[in-house]
Image 1: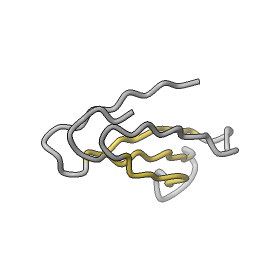
Image 2 (image 1 turned 30 degrees about the vertical axis):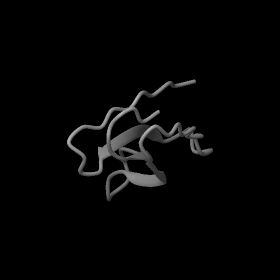
Image 3 (image 1 turned 180 degrees about the vertical axis):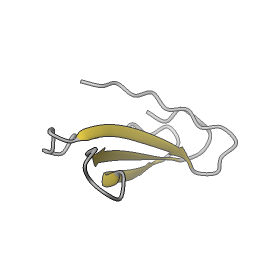
Length: 68
């Protein structure tokens, strides 16, 4: 849920220690102000995974992430 004043970009990324090129973006979504977004994990559970939230230029952006 984006509770800030501006938009945020949320990315689900995956990678593996033996892969060149670093992290790969599996999914990306721009979350508007006051929007709730449900990110579903792709079926690549054998890789290392992370969620990255990027502030798209607003002075403040807030994001609450619930992991299930």
